[in-house]
Length: 256
Image (tube, rainbow, N blue to C red; front, side, top):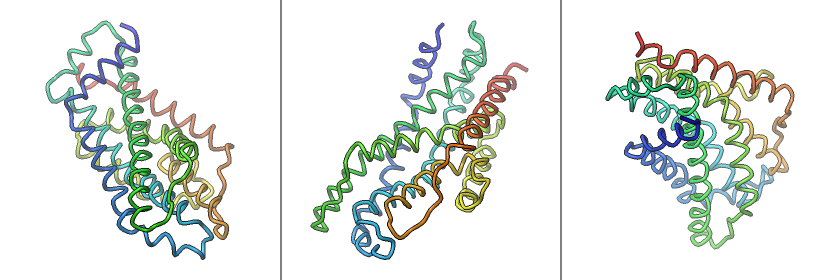
């Protein structure tokens, strides 16, 4: 069985889950306050940022700091527990396929869910901007290429974080502990992005990227720029370590 077939099987398993419902709910929670408080975007003269840029950035900053990581923590555990609840994992492990291959197929599906969340958020941004533009008599729309570029960069920066969350879900068998540790790991990111070692903490990455973009759009606000070195080497190493341990640990509890 090739890798793409495994990914397809994993996708089919999630069709009846509540994962997409969680993604929709998270998107609504993200953008509803932005629409209701759209008038606040006109009071950002001190930062030197336009109302339309602030509308976009504030929404994606809220997503990057907590909502997106928290959603991924829950979805990661749900994805891993779907088979454990009905012993489907034992059937998968009985197939003539390496456990590392199975583990990576599930991780690819997790990456797909994260990409779906960013695409949904980008779509919801335009819907929210349309409503806000109508209620405030002001054009809140930004070019699609800019919005998609920012969403894509944030998604790519989140891969090491997702690898860490996947490691937690594979290593820790009790869902409540896995979710608890995952959610707890998100909180320090708002503090660590202001330190020199932010690149060692993958939960910082999406928030750091969008905060850096905020500094570019706000003329009177200074934020740390994204420097590819030492960030990319550290991010690559963290991803490889987390996925290697996950592949090694995957299915070991069920094989006992």
